[in-house]
Amino acid sequence: MSRKGLTTRGRLLSIGLDTLSTVGLAGVTLGNLATTARMSKSGLFAHFSSKEQLQLDLLDEMVRVADKNVVAPAMAAPKGLPRLTALVTNWLGWSRRAGLRGGCPVAAAIFELDDLSGVVRDRVSELDARWRSLLASLVTESVDCGHLTETVDVEQFVWELFGIYLSHHASSRFIRDPKAEIRAHTAFSSLIQRAGARCE
Amino acid sequence: MSRKGLTTRGRLLSIGLDTLSTVGLAGVTLGNLATTARMSKSGLFAHFSSKEQLQLDLLDEMVRVADKNVVAPAMAAPKGLPRLTALVTNWLGWSRRAGLRGGCPVAAAIFELDDLSGVVRDRVSELDARWRSLLASLVTESVDCGHLTETVDVEQFVWELFGIYLSHHASSRFIRDPKAEIRAHTAFSSLIQRAGARCE
Image 1 (cartoon, one colour):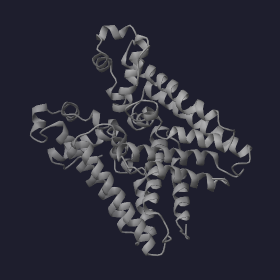
Image 2 (cartoon, rainbow over the protein chains, first blue to last red):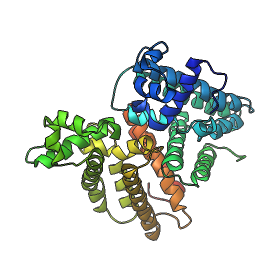
Image 3 (tube, one colour):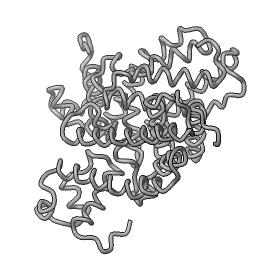
Image 4 (cartoon, each protein chain N blue to C red):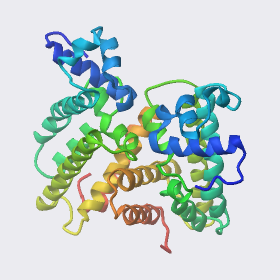
């Protein structure tokens, strides 16, 4: 990812987000970021008051990057199923297309922080809920547009869609299976067909 | 989990596996285990020569515990779909029923190690492949028994089943959604019905 023209803080957030995507929250500390960014740890304190604050700021940066790369382009698609399909297509494997070396920080955090507590977990939980709510609103919009049947169980649909996303993350990033993409799209097609989609 | 009657090594593996399930591989070090087990770090070296060896031994211990709690009881079910259904039922949320405080170490490792390399990743990859192969063999057995249709795409079936497992892990352990269990079983019922199951 090019970091030309960024402020010092912008450069630190960009480097930190890249690290977060590859090693997870446990690997993101002020000490590690200082080393990677070739800055003194005391210099970093001017930008981030603590490890937790750095992690929270990196999650905010991730939201900014994901909004730009995943959400905004999908919202340009026609309402209903085309928009939902565009969002899912952009979501699958988004981190690499957004220039990060690693995987989705929220997917990783869901498995890293599940048995812990604290402000960072709370923030990830909030982002996860917000994301599920966006997906649910697009499923409901698809029903309202007549693209999906009125009897669809929206929560179950979103739950299964999350499974497709997580299985794609595991198969593409961990197993490095070249069929991950086609498997995910086959599963998504089946999911929307069961929800009454006619034109896929 | 009761540790009465265990050897020192058995007690260390039991404590270490519990830690692994709650904080992931990054949190499992000789130093941390020594503190939790109230032993000297040098005492631990008699049992584990390095952090990597400890992590590998804990993964072996996990396999032993999972075989006993998940696989063996499922194999007592009749061949075909009943056996596959029993395995999936035992697999979902297995770590808590096996007495661990945290989630499935392999599920977490898949997201923790995806962008890293090394012997521990290789071992997790091997366990993951072996597990998928077991699932695939039970799907094939279900086809052979006439419980699922011959046209089922076994790899796609296992891929989607993994998604159900991961979504259940995320919703039960991270979101702590009381509906996680029913959502997973609804998704599994839908998956086997699409594969031609008649009696669910």
